[in-house]
Image (cartoon, rainbow, N blue to C red):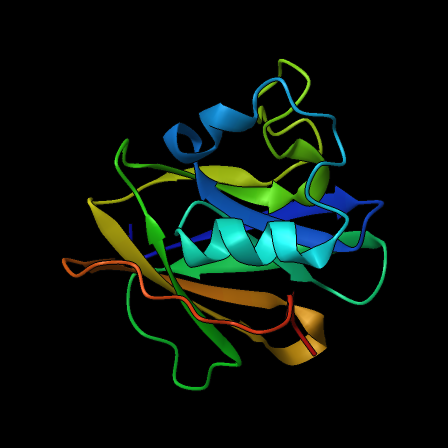
Length: 151
C-alpha cells in the first residue's frame, strides 16, 4: 500500500485507530466507555491499545493513509499491532457492547506489519486527515498527559 483514501462520519468528533485484537477486552463495555473520564483514553493509549483523536467537530471527514513518513505532522504515537489489522474510523465504532468495527460509518481496515506501528497524523489542505502508518520493532512508550487533539 503506498496510499489509500478513506472517509467516515462521526457524531462524537472523534477518529479512532486500533488493532482489533487490542480492544477485545472492551467487547462487553458500554458504547461510551472511552468518553469519560479522559484517564481511560490515556491509559489505553499508554498501553498502545487505541488512539482516540478529537477532531473538533462532528461531521464527515476525508483522509489518506500512507506508508511513508509525513513531511509535517501534528501528532505521533505508537500502537501494538499483533493481528496486523488496523481499524481507522469513527470513535463510535470502537469495540464495545458485543460489537467490533465494521466500517458502518466509513473508515477502513489496513494491513500492517507487527508487532508495533508508529502512527503520524496531520491535517492537510481542506481539512483532509493525513496518516502515516509505519512499521516499528520497538515497544510502546506513549506518555501523553491529555487526550489527543488534531488542530
